[in-house]
Length: 441
Image 1 (cartoon, rainbow, N blue to C red):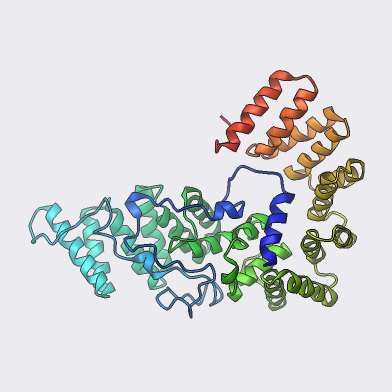
Image 2: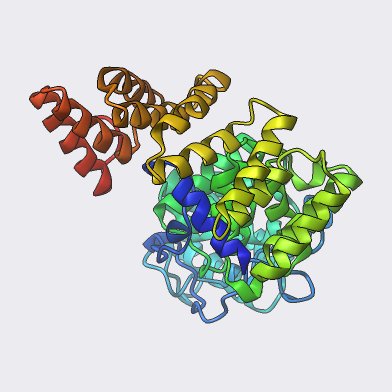
C-alpha cells in the first residue's frame, strides 16, 4: 500500500520531535494499551475492530447519523461491557437490602448491573443514578451512566458523566477517550482534542475497543488544526487490509490535500476529491501513482495535489518528484511543504548550496515554522556558516523545545564553535528527550 510508503517519507522529511500530541508517528499509534486499573473494561480484548469499522461491520456499535458520515469508525459496544465485578474499585455483591448507606449502595449497584446485563437500560440508568447519589466517588457508576447515555445518542449527558469520572481518575484512559468523542459530537472541539490527546499519551491504542474511533476523531481534529502530517501518521498506520471505509479514506484524503476542515464541513466537491485521493493513497503503489496522475490531469490547479504526487514519486524518481514540487511552487511560491521536501532531499544528497535558497524561502514564508529554521540551520552549518546556523537552530529550539534532533544538531554546532559547555548541555538535553523526558526542567 502506497500509504505506508508515504508515511515513511513524511516521517523522514520532518525533524524528530518529542511527542506532544496524540500520534506523531505510526509507531506511537501502535503502542500497547495501558489501561487505568479503575477503568478497565471487563470484556477481554478479543474483538479488535479495524480503524474502518462501520455500522454494517459492527452491528452492536452505537450508530450516529449526525456527527460523521455513516461509515465512520464507531465505538465498539464491547467497550461498554459491565465491569462492576472485574475492577479493583466499585466491587458489588448481592447483599440483602439494609438501612446502612454502604449496603444500600451495594444493593443498588448489583441491581443496576443486573438490569444493564439484561438490556433494561432505563432501569439500569435510574439505579446507577440512585447508587451514585449515595456514593458519588464510584467510578464504575459514572462509566456505566455515560455508556447508557452514549448508546442513546445523549452525548451531552454522557459527557457530563465522563467529566465526573475523569475528575476522580485523571488517567482513566477509556474515560478520557470517550469523553473526547462526546465532546467532538457536541461541538467542543478544543476540549475533544485535549482529552483524546491525553488518552493516547497514556496509552490507548487501536487494540482497545474504543481505540479505533478515538484515533479517527483525533486525526480529523489534528487535521482541522493544520497538523496534517500528524493526522496522516495516525490514519496511515491502519493495517493495510482495513483501510477501506469511505469515511476513513476521506479523512486520509483530507490530510493528503492538507485541507484543514472536518469531514462534515466539506463541500460536495471537496468530499469527492478527498475520497478520490484517499482511495489512491490506500491503493498499491502502481495503482496509486496512476490514480494521482489522473487526478492531476483532471484538476491541475488543485492545491497540494502536485506536492502529494511528488511525495509519492520521491521514493523512486527524484527528478519527477522535484518537477511536481516545482509545479506546486509555481502555483504557490510560498508552499512550505514543497520547499522543505526539496531541501530535505538536497541535504540528503549533500547539495547544500542548492538547498540554501529553498530553505531561506521556507523561513521567509513561515517565520514560526520550527522545521524550516531547523533545516536552514543545518544547511548553513554544512556550508561552514556555523554561527548563522546556530542562530537558526536556537530559533527552532524556542519554537519547538521538545525536539531531540534540534539539540543533537546544536550539540554538534556548539562543539564546532568551541562552546564546550553549551555542547554538553545540548547533548544532555538530547539524550533526556530521546529517552522520553519532557521538554524543559
